[in-house]
Length: 319
Image 1 (cartoon, helix red, strand yellow):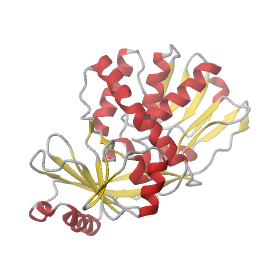
Image 2 (cartoon, one colour; image 1 turned 180 degrees about the vertical axis):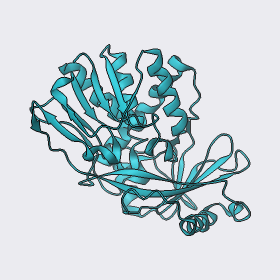
Image 3 (cartoon, helix red, strand yellow; image 1 turned 60 degrees about the vertical axis):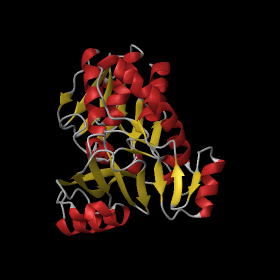
Image 4 (cartoon, helix red, strand yellow; image 1 turned 30 degrees about the vertical axis):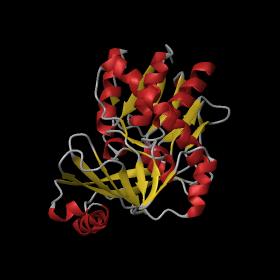
């Protein structure tokens, strides 16, 4: 009963646990595998609220807020762990962006610069999500938070100080009760995405590039990541070589140098698609001690700081 139990040890779950620990609220993480072993470390790490948001919605407003929080979020982690997470404000160049979207984003307060070959979002950034997970894990260890590795099928939340459901695409598979009564939560759907990576000369790209759903970004060590697809096929873990080849062809349109390169890695991840796609599921279930923090879809890495802050603040004020 003394600890807040967080079900899910990805970026969302670990960042909430870290923020709670900073507020002197004991937290425990339950995850079936290694922390960040699923969607968190599968993502490329784009932090781009404008190029992701096609309408005026919570995705846009939350994304803008979370991007503004990122520098201080990273600096706090660096102060606690001295870890390098390869966070860089490098900008995003979007090709073939419609005038309506450019207007929408300007009105929302996003800096947008019209270029001869597209639209530049100079404040967009990238981060290495695997390094970010590692840094959060180290920060939690220093604060005495260690994960409990088990695959939960059910949880009686009244036996805990509070419970946060942050298991991504697996969140709605959990049977939840509060004082013996079932707790119904919105469904989450796995949305499979393929990615490929190339080892290229560092500094080849400045801003990362987007055209439709295709994108190319480059990490500081030269690793160039290309994504991504959206496939509603359940928890199918197979890597399809034809899909990867199609991604390669799309990437060559953005970076011609990739025509002579061969991928060094091909992989998939499962984005947690929400039941209703107007925003992530971030709220308390009424009349229970259950908080929901999942359904981030394509924006889990981007929305990590704002999700952690909001959920941890609410819980700390309540428990």
